[in-house]
Length: 278
Length: 289
Image 1 (cartoon, chains in turn orange, cyan):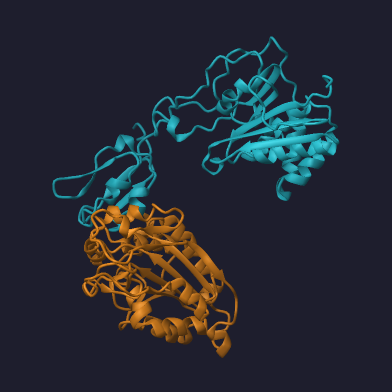
Image 2 (cartoon, one colour; image 1 turned 60 degrees about the vertical axis):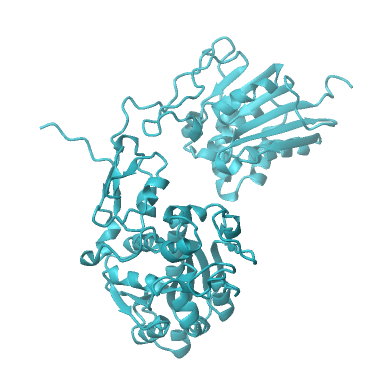
């Protein structure tokens, strides 16, 4: 058995994610990073909201908080203030973190709470039935945009940077090794580290937009190297839409890193016993 | 134009990552410092992917054209065996080719990805004008056998063919090489400069057997285990396996059907969304009781 699987709760496996879901790839890559960094996860707490991505914390044998929809960052902020020595990793999704919890995201970034926020972006609300999310690209079909999405999506990484996050990066499920490297840097960072991971929703986003199977979605991430990109309009099976539907080509990597006082430092709590500082 | 004033032509060739461009900068710098006119041009589009890198350098009192025409080069200096052979068509009748015996095998030349057998021009008859140079052996004596540094040996070998003083070469290396690798580069250069090429006529006409040959038997296969109860049948592993080792069974569960082809690259394990695939290094051969 690969060593990172020691960190699983084996009685919870197999996980509930759909066949081909990109979240599982990112999840295993995350476990490999944790396996390298931590002998045990006693001092690591995962905080998640609601959604497919947030569910993955239930499979990790660490301290886990499965919180209310959109609020993982608020729970995590409180946890970090009360127990500054803990390594806190927030796992959220694009709906959870950008829509329901969008305000909490920008304020956690503004306050520079010393934690790592992993935002799984699959461009749709997967768990609740494939509704349009704030990241759904223009033209994409979802259960709430049967005529194609007319709204302009968020660029989550730019949003976090503008809100004051001191570490901002983006990775994708197609390149787990790239993700692992960036996650290592995010965990090393002292301050609010925001890492957006582009993954694929096969059952709702992929199926509704007739983008093929999980294999097709995953491989479509590779077509616009080094950036991710699926040109929805270029797919012959796609229903025609008036507005060009494009999953924009997005750059990968670490976009921003800076240092300023964390919330704990600003409030004078916690001292130097911080796992992330080392 | 007198014969002495005619420009001389040099080809530097290798594989992306070997430092061909850096070496050509050094040569050009040495020529410039000697007051000569220098022109150089490179083909290096695929250099980041282990592709061919060729640099044309022409120098003399006056140089008009940068391109080295076929059969006109005075020297071909190659950092990789096949790349050197490829450039022999540019070598002039009186020229000499110094070719490193280092080999960088492109993936497309691998017949057997596991056993490492390659279709590669190692045993090709070597023309009279070719001097094979064992860069790694020469550099290793100087304890400087790093892949890029070892190639500086070739600059040392080349420097013996040109009239420029050793000081000019070391100054150019110090200027162009990354600061932390300058001492190693200078050491390798010195070794190359002192290296005595075998006298003409004593050279073996067939390139000697490669230092790293194909193993007698393919190594034991890595062990890929699939947790069938976790597999949801997405077929990602089947699609991404470069060697096509995995297939789906009648129940849509991935099966490791062709262990003999597996190279242990771990792509299936990394990209399995269900955490169902483990790749372990090859099991050690059982010890006879």
